[in-house]
Length: 156
Image (cartoon, rainbow, N blue to C red; front, top):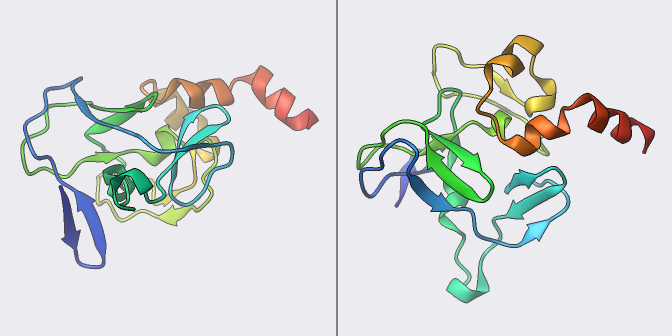
């Protein structure tokens, strides 16, 4: 369910979810360019959170997911899976740096985690030590950062 938190929204768990459990699917149209309300699901593919005409023009629930530097979920393909057990009523979050190679709309993070990174811009902008620690990052982000892929991008 979506809850209002001051001037922003948050997605709250409707039920308990075990570690590894499916929290939700990231449904929506696929686009080849990142945007403010897209989530990267492959090297050059993003799912868009535009209103869905099949659901009375409502936004998909996942559009209201917030970033956290210490998230309780991660993106695996087009699925959002729990990293640790989630209790009913907990906010559902994921780390945008672990799914987005280069964010279309970087922002100042206010998650409050002890290891908060401050500015969220995408995996590409992380220091090598942080990248090494993010072994759980989405496979498409790791692939995009691979030296052979970066060389191909530089030739474009």
